[in-house]
Length: 201
Image (cartoon, rainbow, N blue to C red; front, side, top):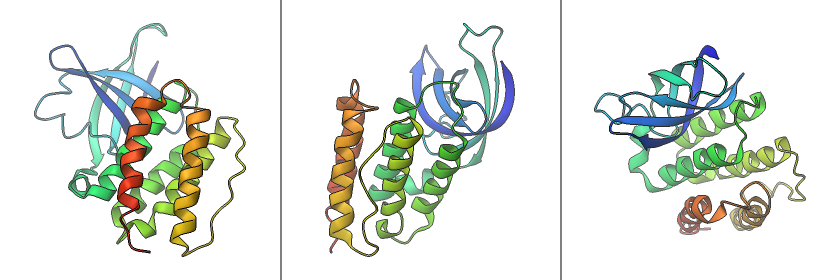
């Protein structure tokens, strides 16, 4: 394996004294786990924040070997991580993607949708500008993984209906792609739901 491509950082787990195993979503190669030397150091730690877009060069000597990656920052989401709602939304959608998607299986539609959703979270003046897009990303992820969902789009500008749809989607996600791992991952969604619930109707 050897490729260079834009990627969205979906997770970064400490490995060894100073390294990180990053889970990177790419358009053509899908979700790829790769070791980043020095990923916990001062220079790379702010680059490997979930939600960031990076330029990744990934290579391995064999299919059975964990690839190594060289990472350069393309777009940082760090300025929005100090805001409770955007931070919770970015944390949830990246954790969902890192956990639910199989490795090395391309989902170009999901890659584009996640890129657009992250941009919406960062530029919209409030959660009302991206909450529906987030639910639509969840629905799309389920469909791309082969799970049909009976959930339909709520009416525009109906915040209580959107929250109801958000709650119903939680059950679908816990039942299907996160059935074995929902306790850890769904905690991020619970936190997001609590913060969305504080928005005045």
